[in-house]
Each structure stands twice: as structure tokens, then as C-alpha cells.
Length: 320
Length: 243
Image (cartoon, rainbow over all chains, first blue to last red; front, side, top):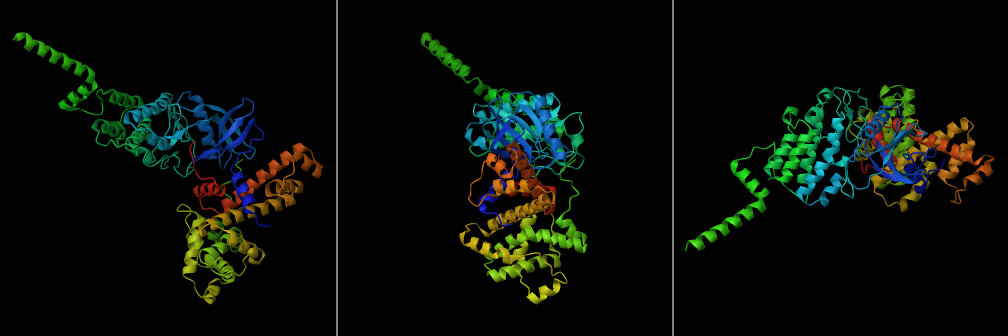
């Protein structure tokens, strides 16, 4: 067999991961992205005439550990209906045995790419607050994400924020799917001593590979790491802000008991910070409290001062 | 049933196992995929003459076994492809006298490398190459690996009497001399089958192609992680947006 020419070689290489959707109602358009577990493709739903995203494994059938993970991700997303989560439309198996699921296509940019376009701290904090919402919602339904990081958050063109990649999610009370060593960027947490997650965003108990120690506070830690990322990314540095530092420190406390007990508590502090109200993570000195209240009620204070000056003026004029 | 059992035969495991026939088979697979990249790397990175590069390519594979370099490779630490390139650099930098290499090669004289057949074609392509030696190594690795997979697929199809499947794949995916791909209706007429058969048989051939590529790649990688990285690299799709 004569060696392949460059053009044919490139075509064969590109086709290696492409899913054969010929037996389905979907038509492959292009690749959108790639994650640790598989590849995401843009496709056309021929029946409904809409664009969708199809996530496939690069290799492995539905009974393989990664196949189980992919299907679990689809099931987790299907049970969590929230504007901050991508709805799943369909699951199936390709002719070569690889499982896939079909979901709404998400336009926008990953948070790590999008953050430089958000110049003010308050805007970033509002964005952070929105990304906490689906996580809190999932926790309320017994689902932990376990791999929260800026790369797994999408910011849409209309201000929408979506939490993606639930491939490592754990459903509390359900038996864990074993998928050790699956993920090049991050690997799975399935049994004792096996670590899944991303260094830098992973809680210490998660790094230690102790699945029994992981609870919603592990996600709180990761959210704290995202908050830290948002306030320190280029274009904005806010290290001198003690109150915000205290929120990050409390969310990222090494011991779970010292963290926020849940995501809503973290969100409440971020919202209070944005409103200029007191926060649970920081005990203010009297002068700091005074200064904060002055800033919070700036308009009322100016009006009051103006009133007092006017009264003083009237008092001194008529006294003569 | 899983398509790709974890107990699959592996070049590295066969070399470590020490059985002579398994070692020879492993070397055959390894050299079938790597001799072209090694030859081109020696020509471009080390600027060896065609004759020298041909000799050194042969000697390099003998050295790999004689010095137990493959046994030292650790799959978790990096890719075999990168490791072999580093080995070539070390091999050339510390060139040992030919007689000494011959001696250490022991009785292992069989090397299934047929440089003559493709040397001319590679030499012709050298003048038009614009890549770095490292990129050329990667591209030749992909070309050879896919070539080995195609050879296996061809042999398997011939054995199973699937010559039309193979022809369809060759016409549609490997290209015709004219550069034009006939329509499915034309192919159906040419082979005396239905148009729907063209679709189905071509799909089957493509699945078999993919299966063979994955089989060869699994044989040549040392860990699951390396396999996944190399599959991405082979497909030319590096990680992008994560979902």
C-alpha cells in the first residue's frame, strides 16, 4: 500500500473521532470543543430544524467506565432543570458503540476567556452570584459537581451563565460509577485513594482522595477558588479588599467545618457585599463599619449634611 | 461487550515479557509505525545523508532492544512518541562504533524495515517539507500508524471476502487517481449493488478503519492516559472548549 498523501492523511485523521450520525435525525456540522472525557460537536436536528450539541466519547462503549460516566452526566443534567444548566434532549449509541447525548447548544465563551471582558468588580461578582445559582439548585437535589472551575462555566452573549461538564458529578445516596484514570486534565474520584478534580480548584478533602469526606462544602471550596480567580485576573486586582478577601478565605478554608455550610450562605455574603451590607465572614472594626455605612448611605448622608448646614446657616442669620 | 478489552496485546508489555517470538512481533509493530518518522528525523534534525540515515534507522531499533530502552519507558510520565524522539537524540549524540553495536545486537538481525521501497518517495517529499523535524516526526508517525491500520483492515477484509467494502473505502476515503469521487449511485452501478448497500458498507468499512487505528494505537501506548492523548493528537484535535 503506497503511503497516504498529506491531504488524504489529514482527512482520515480528522474523521477518526467524528461520530457517525447517519442512523439518527442529526447531521454533523463541526467540532465545538474537547474535554477530558470526549468531544462536543455541533449538529443539525433534521426533524426540529434546530442546532444542537452532541457530546461523544473519543473511545469506549456504553458499558465502559467512561461510557457510564457520560450517561450518568446526561442523567444528572436531565434531572436538573434550571436556566443555569444545559438541557439534555436525547441519548443514544453510535454504530461503533460509543455513547452520546444531545443537548442544547451553548453560545458564548468560557469564563476564563470571558473574564477579561468584564472590567468592574461588581459586574464580576454578579456573574459569580449567577453561577452559584445552578450549583445551589443541584445541591438541593442531592447532586455535587466536584469539578467546578472557570473552564467549566460558560458565559453567554445575553448575560446567561451556565455551569457545564457534570461528568464527575456525584449523586448523593447513589452508588459511585468507577472510572479511574479517565481524565487527562483531571482524573476521577471513584473510590478511596483515587482523585478526580482539578488542582487549584479542588478542596483538600477531594485532593486526599477520600470520597466519604466530600459534601456540598467541597463545591463551596471550588466556588471560593473561582471567586479568587475572578478578583485577581488581569484587568482587575482587588487584593486589598479585606471584606472580599474574608469571603474567599471562608469559602476556601482548609477544614470543611470552617467554610460556608452551603452555597446559599456564600451567595448571601456576596450579595451583602455588593449591597454594602455587613457580611458574616468578616468582623468589622467600628470605624470600618462607620465608613461602610457612610458609603452605603452616601446620598442620605449628603442630604442630611446639607440640611444641617442650612439649619445652622438659618440659626446664625436669625440670631443676629 | 466492551469493544476494546483492557487485556489487549501491547508492544511494551510484549517487550518486557521477554518471550523471543513476542519480542519479535513487538519490534515488527514498533518499527512498522516508527521507521519512517525515525528516518525522516535523522535526515532533518541530524542532517544525515540518505545512506547514513537508512543505516542509523536500522541500528536505532536494534539499540532500543539491546539497551533495554523500551523497558525503561514509563507510560505515566510521557508519550512513547516523545520518548523515542529523545532516544534518537541520545543515540545519535553518543554514536557508538558500528562493530560494537553489531555485537550488542546479538542474534537479533531480523528487522522488518524495507527502506528501499519508500526511501525515494520520502526523499522527494523532503524538498517540499516546511515543518520542523519534530512536526515531521509527528506527521510521519500518524501516516505510518494509519498505514499499518489500513494494511490490517485490508488483510482482514480480504480474508472475510469483503472486497467491495474495501474498494468503496479506497475510492471514497483514500481517493482515486483522477481525484474525483463518484456518487453513491455510480458506485452502486459499478459494483452491482444497491445504493443503500454503498451507504451501509462504506459505514462498516469506516468503523473497521477506526477500530484498527485504535487497536494499533492501544498496542503502542503505555497507559490509558497516553492512549487518550495520542488519540486526540492523531485526530488532529487538541483540547479546545470544554463542555
